[in-house]
Length: 289
Figure 1 (tube, rainbow, N blue to C red):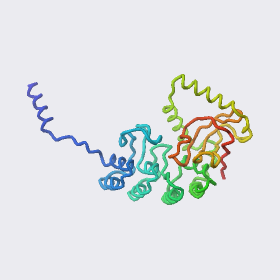
Figure 2 (figure 1 turned 90 degrees about the horizontal axis):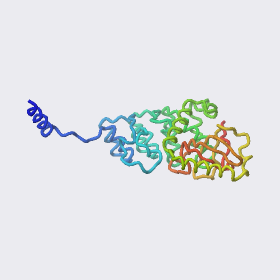
Figure 3 (figure 1 turned 45 degrees about the horizontal axis):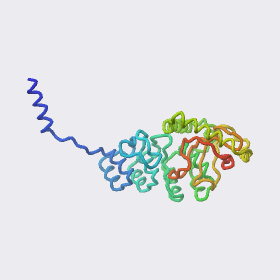
Figure 4 (figure 1 turned 135 degrees about the vertical axis):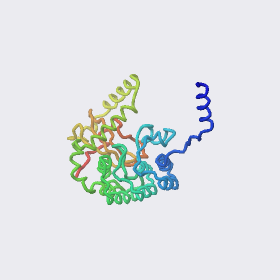
């Protein structure tokens, strides 16, 4: 009997239908958005892929170099958020046409607003807001940092003038806005994981920060009145894009910052969630209307 069952199982394995390696329509949609394959996006949607699907990067991305925002296999992404990261307006249009939920975010740090040139970003932002998009805490803090910046002021105003944003500004500045708290907690968790160091590296980092903090007192007055926990923005022209950060500590002419984000995500002067010391003279208080 045992031999009979063994042979039966062997026959089933040999003669049975081959298992298909074809990924699901949802996975193919994520792969197509990642690869900016517009024909692939259309095909996946036609085959029934959900524009509201959420997946870890490991499901559709085989390597983990490249942009920092895609460097962790278990980080989650949505099709619209992924297309926005690439600034791929054509992909965003296809997903909007397919009925995507513009307010669906896979992570607190995900946005549906595209990282593209100022005009394209502004126009898509206005379209999304007209469709009911509610700017995220990341969108709002980024807009605060870009108000008055050449080329970006119209975009910043579109975000800050969106319905519901005005009453959130004070809460975000105070750190009590729930979405802002989620964003900070997520960035801290990401930082804790991505910045695991050996004891030697940590010690060397502390020494370096202490040396940097003791180097200069020239900018002590630059942020007079700014308290620990306040939001500050990098001065225009200092870095390749504008950044918003939270003051964590200060010593003489230096401040320790937790970077909240910068508008152009393709530029890596700083990374969201990063903790670092910088010259106080390079930062100014974020102004809230």
